[in-house]
Image (cartoon, rainbow, N blue to C red; front, side, top):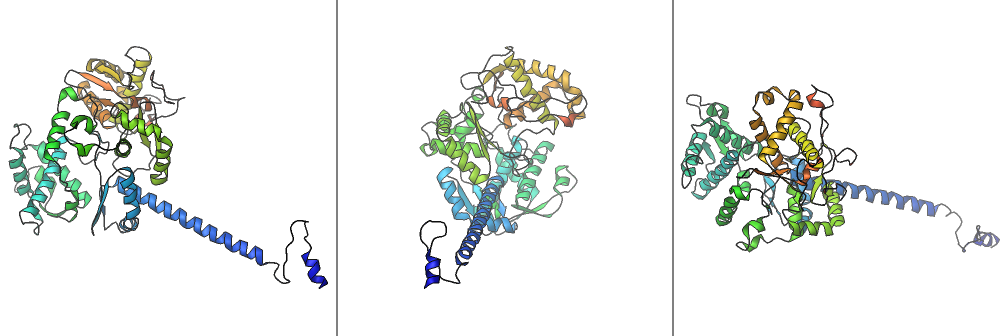
Length: 472
């Protein structure tokens, strides 16, 4: 009894506590077990989050995930419902899956997606790709789907015949022209890389070079079906007419702006349009979609947190544009951006720096209400000639052997792809976009082409266009 009474006396003068003899270590043991469980739960949660992020990024940065990519294919399948739920809520895109392939079916809200592919470089490359998909679908519809093998010569003959209907002679394909043969070669190689085609016999290179009696036997795989989409031909006709109109080159690229009330189905919610444009890249401009941009600004914190948790990417919102920032070397997909490697990229970055200097010095007009600068091709020509005189010796032999006009056309193409510029239009007008302020470049010293200082986002290192404050 005395021992029990002694044990009942609180040692620290706090609340009373009773403890039976021999049970002095029970509480610490329970606490240790609880801590171990918490750590296991935390570890599993981290693993689950990492796997889900990997699945999201893979869907976004790969055109198709094949069953032969066993680990990735299983990972996306395992998280399919969670992945689809996220896209239902944010993008409205559908995840298409079969026993052999998984694909995120992306739908545009604007006509300027930034996802480009090294294999497909020219408009006729994309045209060939579309015709090959038509050929595959046509074989299926005409009852020849079970026989998936075909000769390249037969494919070329069908494309050439179909492409001549209702178009001018220059637009039609003629595979006697080397340029058209190389276009179809690049399109076939792209589909082969995706796993939609298999080379059975022959060499496409020999056919493209018009070697005597050269032909190639290909075979479609089940993946080709996942790449075929049904489009409204009337919608395509309206959009094609708009984007091919030289007077419309500098206009906003929002599909709703182009289509008006003709296709109400294209009336997508503003925040969904913002998500789509950000993910497809290269940039969401206030100029293109003021409504979606305003919605993004209102929900910046929510979107930024969701983007970071879902993909591990950062959201950068400025006064006139917003874009996604990925860590260096993180992106494995076809995301286009400027790098310090490659002469055309270097020239584009040097042009960005020179443009900003022209505006800040007052030599060129200041930005408009959307942060865009309006100049002419004559202004760009004069600026590039000066730039070439200053830095031309740092460029490769191919660039040095080209004429300035040809090089400037290459720069226009590159800057349009990355979302830095629109135009020139039919009247020779060029619109420089506010994203030019993201780049600053110079050579460390003459003769060191690969030592180019690359992209910079630091205010201390980047000259800001007047009225285009990077901190806004």
